[in-house]
Length: 453
Image (cartoon, rainbow, N blue to C red):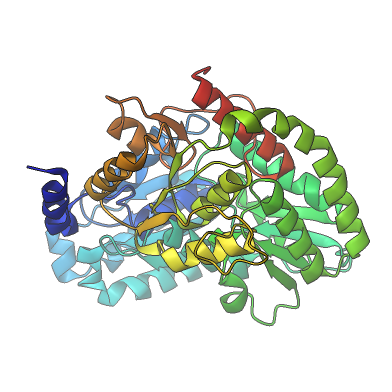
């Protein structure tokens, strides 16, 4: 069978095949719960769902175990038939006394939702009984993606935040939509870098949603008069924050030199910061990091790299790779139902990346437009990657442990950046966002190409 025949066979079977990230909203809701110590997810579900959420985090996160933030009510057939609400009330009340959590997040799966006539009433009863917030988020089957589930939890928590007070100046800011998928040091470094950049622009950061802080500190992030929303929180400003009196700024991920400059410029415009201040920060940072990055450009320029990441991260990383002179012939958007080719190219444009087929000005030479595959199966990704290698071998992939496993028998090297990352763990802080993150990411690329791990 030829490769083309194999490709046709794979496409025929694709609806039944595994994706890079097969988890739906349920996994994302648990990721958000895991990111807030003191929060507990009450899985009001049947057998199996607890493993779907918990085990995918356990191997990925060496920084904090996830077991104690998930409880399972154990809905059996009899309770599905008769109504499972009393079981939920009894279980949650008992476990509140044992654990004293800061917030309960009740989730239900498809089978419970088929007979959920009394679940909402049970949640309302819990809200009256317990002195903590009780959230109710349905998560049937494979609906959504980890990213949409994370956003849903963040949206549900946002109205519970504290409000700005007399001590909240116009220069106070919170960061929303940071996708914390584990308690490891690359995330601590990213958050530190974002705080540093905002501070350099004259802003006081009151908190991050979410950065691993406990619930009382998460709530205090709401005292900021401004919120900068990263892509994983886009849309929340228009829904959960309508008419809240705060100023909201939606940005792309600050990855790379141009990407980070675009980030602080956008924040500056939206929050009314003196353009001279932002320009000074940008120029000072670029004068520091560009000479370092230039040392690696001769090695990286012209190298072919494939990207397997969620839409927001893929756009940011692809834009930085083209800035370094790398060729990105093919991109796979791995965020399942959230994946969007249109959103990918729109973000690339905002981040300064333009491609051959875009409208060129003054005869400018531009990189070739990558082929983009959104939410496709692992088999399809592998086949399309191998087909692209006919046009020239691709020695490096930026992706996750899924790609490490897929290409383990060949000569392709994988730089793990996405979820899940069960092979790469961070004991030492090394960001991939911001200007410092640009240098660190170039270092990782250089080590990967040179096989100097």
